[in-house]
Amino acid sequence: MRTLQRWHAAHKRGGIAGLATANRGTTQRRSTPELVALVEGLALLKPRLPVATIARKTNRVAADHDWPPLSYSTVRSIATGLDPGMRTLAQQGAVAYRDTYELAWRHRAKRANAIWQADHTELDILVLDANLKPGRPWLTTILDDYSRAVCGYMLFLGAPSAMNTALALRQAIWPKARAEWPMCGIPDTLYVDHGSDFTSNHLAQTAKDLHFEIIYSTIARPQGRGKIERFFGSVNTELLTELPGHLTRGHPPPAPVLTLKELDTAICRFITENYHQREHPEIKDTPHHAWVGDGWLPRLPATMDELNLLLLTVAKPRIVHRDGVHFQGLRYVSPLLAAYVREPVIVRYDPRDITEIRVFHKNQFICRAVDPDHETSTLTLKDIQAARSARRRELRGQINQRIAVVARHLPDLASTKPTPAPDAVDQPKKRPKLRTYLEDGQ
Image 1 (cartoon, rainbow, N blue to C red):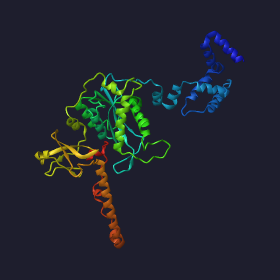
Image 2 (image 1 turned 180 degrees about the horizontal axis):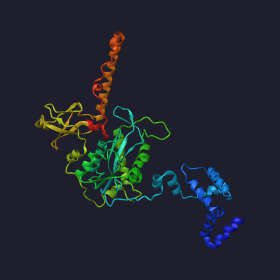
Image 3 (image 1 turned 90 degrees about the horizontal axis):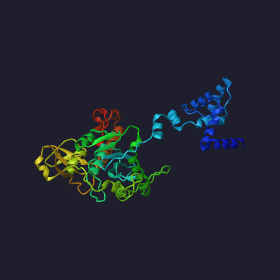
Image 4 (image 1 turned 90 degrees about the vertical axis):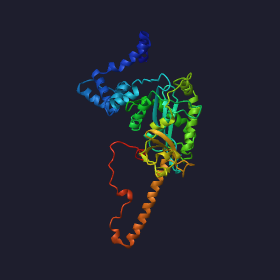
């Protein structure tokens, strides 16, 4: 009753502000200032101390100085009354404080194609690979900062690489065959993180040749990539939850049903028919309308061949033989190669389908050459590598079977070490100082 009377009197004197002041100062007035500071200091220690421990330590000090002790509730109110930002900074560090309490500047480009963002994510779904085995795909996306439109993407199995980034960028830059997907052109700036595929010399040279700038986000600062992360969230929560093979936390992985190509088709349809056509809550417009605007002409390379020359992975130089170009154990032919027999050429290819390669001579495009044995089917680089590995395993198994026969009948000979498999005879390779990608060594 007395507390209510005191609050009523404080309210009559100063209104709501007077009431708040009276309440806030109650604990402080009844406590020794030195003890209050001690409680606050103990509450900021790392690791965090329980309130009971703080109370015991504080009251020991109070007893030593003949100060009135603090109750548990008083200690608790002092400790919990500290600024949450101060507690976070003291106990979790500057990074946690920055990511939780510092103001984030939400910059937006002034026009379409001024800034593109690029990033990868592993999707929450299982698909069937070329060998009908389950795999969890990755998605590389190129997003326009102004309109939030997806300019290009690349869906793949395996870890992100410079090749997959180049393929996503190639799709983003060149006009699409689908009229409802008009996004294309060369950006002024490409905003990426510090992944090794984004910091590669290949991408830096491409940026120089196409006249755009690469800007890298601050290390360990995910806020700068929030826009593209939001799109990834839309794909995972809106599209993949409706598809078979979706992964749910806390549940066993389901059996995959879709192939990578079928998932690619579903993602393309989601982007063009759903995501691009609905109003984005931040820009208050649809990504499609925001990118198209009143109509404008984006910057483009002169030809697709010029773009391929810059973006597609460059293999080791090859020599044109009388029966064509030999690459990855396949033979590629074209009538236009007749004029270049015994000439060195550069081969560029799309790892998703290497039944066709592009041949360049002195940085000039010559022709597309095809593998006659597979021209009616799709053959990936991973298919060839898997077939090679399977063949090696088969041969090694046959070798071991025959050595076992020798061991049974001629143990003296078998006591000597058998000749290792051909790929083990070579001297061990030195580990490269810089990270390389699988396609770089082809």
